[in-house]
Amino acid sequence: NLTGRPGGEPGVTVIRGVLEVESEKKAAGMTVKLEYVNGGKTFSAATGPKGEFEFREEMAGGKYSVEVPQIAGAEVGIRAEGADVTRRWLEIVPGQDVELKIFAARAAQVRGRVLSNGAGAEGVLVALVPEKFEGANNLLREDQSDSDGSFRMADVVPGKYTLIAVENAWDGDWRSAEFLGRFVAGGKKVEIGAGGVVNIEVEARSSEGTKERSKEATK
Image (cartoon, rainbow, N blue to C red; front, side, top):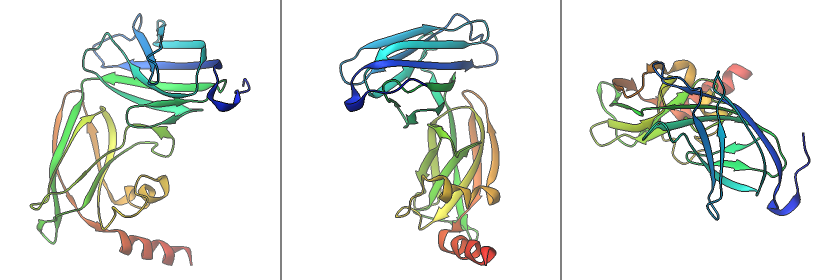
């Protein structure tokens, strides 16, 4: 790997990756575009026959949006090694090589109801947890259940997920891999297609109860 420059100054950064798109489309010949949030400088790379692409540029450190212009309105999912990822941004360290897997497709929706003892449960964390959630990605989606237990998550990237519902979770580090890992085994598996709408019910689980069982299991 190349050595990054301190202070966010531009340094040669190599970003390699693969673009995947909906099954009926081909990723070859498309464009992956990175746009720097501070100043709007844009970098573009064309994809090869298997969707592969590479950037080799002097890039300032900071946040970049990721777009695939040929797929209008696409929701872009990102998995990264060598960079942090938030819902909308890829965060680059100058000179630090990055590996990306990008999936661009029509957004899906997941909606349904959280139940507790047969009734709707209010204020529950509902999270759609992607496979291989431990690595840097922007695929996690979440909502808080309404008074009747209903929830709705839009802008979902198609793929395989586990749906979990956790009571009294909002004050904890619910985005962390450690937290999510306590609940995925008991969650509901769901596979979501491009542009699809999934309706599902899920049972609320206690964050404290799971924590106590986890402690007991390690004794």
